[in-house]
Length: 271
Ligand code: ZN
Image (cartoon, rainbow, N blue to C red; front, side, top):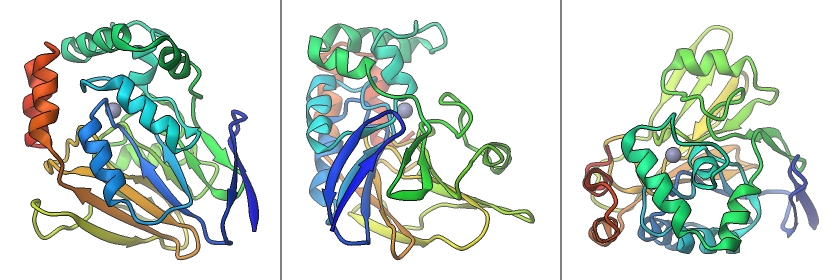
């Protein structure tokens, strides 16, 4: 069966698959090529790739990461670092380290990748073939909003026009389920942080789910491994993944580029 997936911004993609769609979600890669390649090598079979923003900023391989994600498909949401690295907004809202990385990244980008970054669409993005979900970087109401606490998620869920929102920005893998009666936070449970692991999360009927696949290139939830997720539209299940990657090489590249040392050191702690 042939389906057309098209976003509100006019991005379109012709896909061939059955009635079940398996979506690979990547977010917050932040120029970390080693983490991205590890995730792609570990990713299970999927029909389409969705990128929730911040492909660049912080890491030392912005051009290589953009080249790679452009090969994977064309469903993207702009992130705040994409916007700043593209020069669309100034970096005054950023802390010193983020600002230094954004200015460095802007100077590294090839003309083609800079134009591509500038053209990324602001979320929410809707996919006609998956009408019960939307894609955002920060929250349904604001691309810069951090959904860290259940109260944040509940306030933002009121602006969600569909039952399932995929978001990024916080670099924390997990899910909020908001109903009339409860606000529940779920974080994947892994037995250790050494090896590759996955955790299945079945989406329940009722309420609003806000789902974060985690950060590929700069996790901040205390787990150093690269994060991503797979959504199965028929089983209504999100499978979260964590994948070890070559942190030392990513760190060395950051130091060799004279980017702030903290951007390298934090990778090994996932903080
Ligand atoms: Zn980010």
